[in-house]
Amino acid sequence: MKSGTYLNILEQRDSCNVEELHRVILDVYKEKKYDEDGNIEEDNQIVQLYEVVNSALKKNKFIGTSADFHNLSVECARRNAEEVACDFLERGLDKYPISVDLLADYIKYGVVCNRIENCRRYYSTLDRIPKSNWNWRAFRFSIDYLMVEMEREICGSEIKQTMLSLAEEFRRYIPDDENGYLVQSEVHSRFNEKELEIAILEEAVAKLPRASKSLLRLADIYYMQGRVEEALSSLCRCELDSLEPQMGVSQGYLYYLDGLCQSNILLRELDNVQIERDAIREKALKIYDSLKIAKKSLDHSFNLQNEWKFLVNMLEVKTKVEYPYY
Image (cartoon, rainbow, N blue to C red; front, side):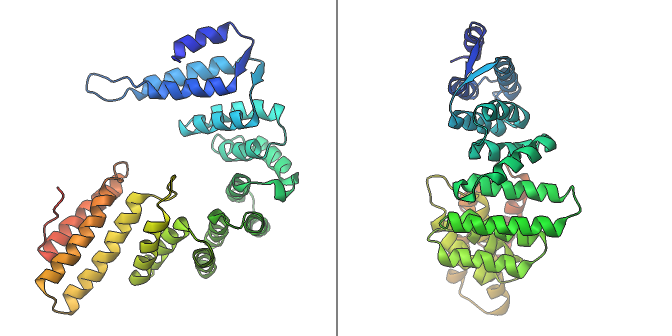
């Protein structure tokens, strides 16, 4: 439905159907308009978004399930409209005051738009709900929220213990979810406890059948510590674990780091031993395969694009093997 049509319909009603509003916002972004240079007019989409949501927020009655309010808030936040997301979440929480999803969403988006007092109130409500009723979102967003609160209050050790307790409960109640391990490792990282961070990530990799995020984080750490072969081993498994319907890691960065690790190993071989030209070419082409995959996912990362170009140029000079995918 076009936004103009929806606004006319909304004027005739005394309520807002939240699921319908969500569909209209999706339609706003599906209906792309282009300028004279062929670029998408994103400003026009933003204007339409705010016209629609501002009109909807004037209604006193909202029809929808807690899931409808959650989906709408996520869509608004995806458009960098966290304040609007919170406006609708407040309407949703009026109807569903102990919805775990809505409370978790609010403390996630509320800190972005500086609604700190509301976040504290809603976090307090969420915290009173038995942890056995929490989902991954409640655990993950609560720890993220407490990280922000820690920057505002001089009570780091107390909040640290709360976060670690939440991470332990996350793992207890949702044992197959990798995020429980990740948030626990992030707490240790925040307090510069590198050995504990690594230990938690390695535990996730050992226990879980799929642990792509932990593997990629471990590869990062191993690489920075000079443990390049271990980093590459983690990346090899990560490439398989990350093949999911909704990929949880950046494929561009995954394959870029893979190419970087392989390059380190090859350059050491070039410096230390005499290897055949055919072997050099075979290894260089394998690196280029990883970098080709990486390039397709690095379009929005300007810094990594430049690093990618440097790596390819350097390999061409050092190995005398040209990149074949220009």
